[in-house]
Image (cartoon, rainbow, N blue to C red; front, side, top):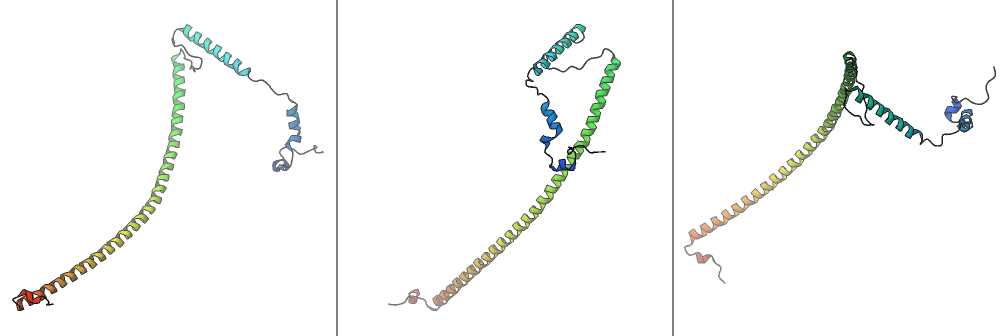
Amino acid sequence: MAKKGGVSKHSRAARRGEVDPFNSTEAKELSSIPRLENTDTISPLIRASLTKNQQLLNDKLSRSGKNEMKLKPGDHVITTHNNKKKQHMVSKTIRSKQHRFQSVDGRLGKKIENALNRKKKIGNLRKTGWDKINEIAKNSLQNELIIKSNSEKITNEDLEDELADEMKDDEEILEEVTQNTNNPFELLAEE
């Protein structure tokens, strides 16, 4: 069997981009098909038929007399059944669909909740690491400040003690001098 001429569109060469897609036979066929130039006329026709059908449905419902509500052109109508069994079946299908949706939503909700909890745990773990580091830094700074203030207090206390000792020494000297002499003016130096 002889092969067709050219490279197929699903070949390895086509996947690698070695084949020019504009020269393929499909591109030539598509280029020969005439395009729709004016598509604006289609949408008004569809809208007109929808409003007409909506009006017909409203008329039918008003004639039946069971449903007095007038529906607007944009409203969606769920048909009511005269037979209660059919109504029950519709409600049963709706209920089953809602139940399935809730169960799927519940599963997804659990997954989302678990993901959020994991995110919070990771954030808390990272935050606690930084909190511990911050606490250690604060404690070390406080310890340094306490040590400095204690050393300053010690030096201040030492200075006060020294001054008190000097004052005591001066007072003792004065007392000795005053005891030895009755005249306090004798202590003054003469010029």
